[in-house]
Image (cartoon, rainbow, N blue to C red; front, side, top):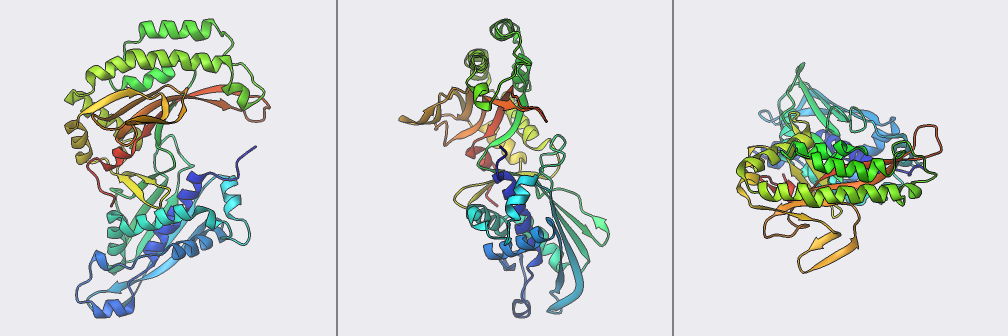
Length: 402
């Protein structure tokens, strides 16, 4: 049974509305006439309520809407006749659309107060968003501001979930910032999928770990010789998949490689400056596809947000810090104890040396089971994924929360 909605979809929708609300809220006439010098800091803050009002309009118009806002003339201290157009369109899966479209529209917003708070805080604090808002509001030129929720389209070609494009006087600006890859309650930013050995080993090859001949032989013997029908074996439920002997064997075989060759190789390389530079490039590539202007933003449950732009400061921070590697055996490992249930998902953590594998986590690689239900069928297949997840410290390296 499909879930009613996906939090990631809802976060994308709310962020698009928050950005639109920020662009359409203009400096008041009173402040315009009173202030001698207008700066970015004078921009009016948007409220969570204004974001909700904007979102109601967007949902009411089939998840797309147009807003107009007039420029401010700083020199003559008046509202200009120049009008900017703010265009918003968000495409999210049908289940999330239906959930948010429940009548009366807005009646379910209270379920997402933490997301509204994070989105509102983000647009009020983010330097690049504010710079764009300031420029379009005071340039006395006709601007087209296009805000698109694109996370469910073209996922193989872009990491962007919410895109902001600006066309000024007919000239489209280059995408140098505010192309947002949004995360909510997940740190995952890359993955490989498949049961074969290569599917999970390939992700480590970009880090220079390549000699797997013996490991592959042992893996194939444990999996494909023992379970020759594994690739097409049908199961009656997701639970049957995850509890199957085949999945248990896959995890055990992967665990041996994780705790063996991969751990040894990472231990040997981890504080080599060339490897750390490679690691920084690997993270940037997986998080952004090296697309210009992509920023990784994570909304937290408490209404805060984290942001990483992957500039030179990010690379310099990684190459200058001491790192350590550990195998994660519990859902949370903390100094002086263990919190959570013991995990059966093989996981390797790279974190700040001398720190805590959770609090000071840079990135982790996790091998986990899932299931795949072919379209139109009533059976399930095994699906294994190797996830790459960002720790909170990844967002703070060479960055600010603005």
